[in-house]
Image (cartoon, rainbow, N blue to C red; front, side):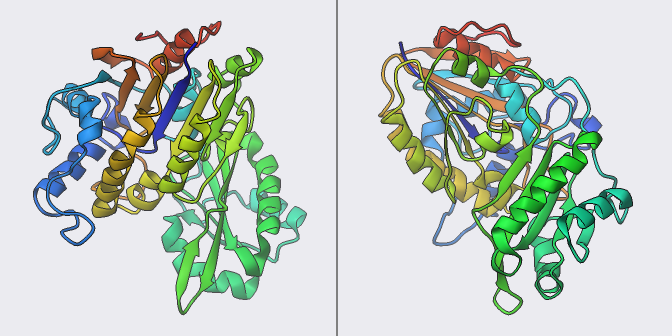
Length: 404
């Protein structure tokens, strides 16, 4: 029996979804707008990258063809036929455009309910919620309490947070409460404990995640978020592909923030790393010990956190090209019976207004032996779970239709 690898390029959308207008995202296109900027010379004409977007390996797996099928337009720089692999694109059934919904649906559980969200007003958090957290955690108070970019609000309030001992609370259009504090002055373990307290207090509001955002540095040299981020997510209300694989006794390795997203349920061996490159290294190492019938589920988060949310087109383009250059290391380690799926959980168009995710189609690029050709439009991300389950001969009763 072969193995299965699900690789999520976090936020790598390929065109606005049919319902994007409902989210204010009609016309968003993460890949298309990055490729257009590169072709026009507006994406980092320096020593790191130059010219059109170059993704030869992803293109050979069908990325350009999938993007053209999704939008009707071939992104510049992605010309060339599909040399190997199955290719298509998928629409999200779940409501929202957040990380848990996208990943849960990829794993076979489309979210049927609305998450709770915090309003745009300032302060955005209910006074009773903040008072309860402050009291239980023994805080002097909190800073922020508004919708904000994490890097911007830390730059603005980081020094005051160190001086007063007050952590920074903020949110976004996602169902999330984020808490930032200095890793040394406030303490990493204290921050994680605070997030556990906050997690309990937001449960009744149906908030998807509480995220610890530790940072280091000072007002003179600037502040930098560290790799010790941790997500405190609610567990999926129903079984996912991970649960089914675990019950079947399969080897499971989850890489990056997958363990946090699924509340460490069915997530097997959890491996983390500080960057995409490090997470690819961990992926290669895990492939060496993943047994037949095993499942590897990885998230590469830099596309989203470092470049999408920061609206950094050159940075996103460079990260895509670096990922593409490393893909052959993964492909050469695949056996003839192994299934590889490369996809995304939502979009985060770096050319778009604001700093939030964008509602987009995602690519579905699969490699299984010598199979090639289109798999068309998939009407749910859950088709990937159904396909993995079929490949691994799991008893799948969840959502989705296999494309194998």
